[in-house]
Length: 483
Image (cartoon, rainbow, N blue to C red; front, side, top):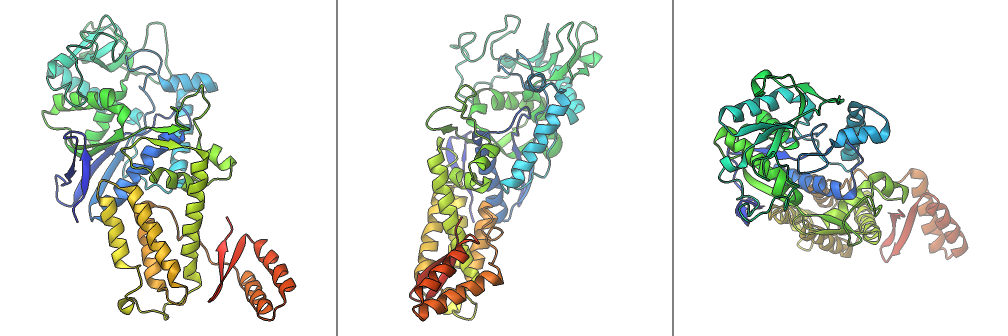
């Protein structure tokens, strides 16, 4: 099956082909671990999880690297201001190392709660300092660097293609139009590869700058730039040319542009063949910001009674290239949609394989065809909205059949496909009810048959006390989850 992906390099949807047949080398920009992730942050990882699942279902062996930025991400794209980890350490009264570990652990726990596939490699920037310094050494040897008072910089004027990826107008760009201008920099777009610790300061995270990288021969402590770490880790673990690089659209004009410049300047090869970017997620139509207090976390959603999988479904309702909008009304709707899907999944506990033979059931809409259609839909540039609509339509047709005509094996097969491609855990979150509740349902049915409606109502209340609802149909009673 052909996989189609929107490639930022061509700005078109292209047929995807890997460099090595059957194998994919994929890099995802990971979190800066100085605070809890918000719903906007999680959207990216939900989309890229769907990408990996779709590629794997298309029989690709995916090797995926996702970095942990635990040093070097400054609060300003101008390569000034403090490191976000140092800022987090000051806020919490801890060391930067402690802050990094706490929020890394929280991120990994959040990935598990959202049922996101773990990457093949989850490297930390602080674990790849030598590789980053070696990349600076290579760039210096090729005359792409220069040193000023606060660090070693990449000279973008020596990389002619620098402005192509983000369509930057560097000649017309005034100093400070994209980033605040440092007067020592040769050009406003030049960026730090290695920053020096300011004189008189001591950082929690700093390393000795190798003597061969310093022009004046004075010992300097320093730390890597945010852009440098991604290139060093990606190329160390995946090779000099990647199949796919993913990240947010906010990375295009600075972070990804700088990654391309330093990587291709060092190797002389294309850094990545495909670039995929997810759009922003707003909250109630506004940008997520600390001042508005709308940076909701998974814990915030849990306090309001929502599962991480509810968030996952509300994110997947929008296409990754379109701007999304999170609202609690939308989250409630996604919760109800997932509850409906779980109740369709629960039908497998109430039907039997012997009722319908899939091969002879021309009116049975579930099975290979539905599973194949779902994969084909997602293979068209991760069209998750269309995929969810397809699931709705298929489930609607299944419910019309009635329990006596649904093929259990085919239903389970389709549920397995949904869980494999979207990670919604429809099977894992829909256990069978207890024998005690089943007995209550049977007793209620007998009471209704005998027109003992008072007893029937009492038994219904007993059933609902177990968070199970009963729906009466012409073919008997069907139990469902109440929440």
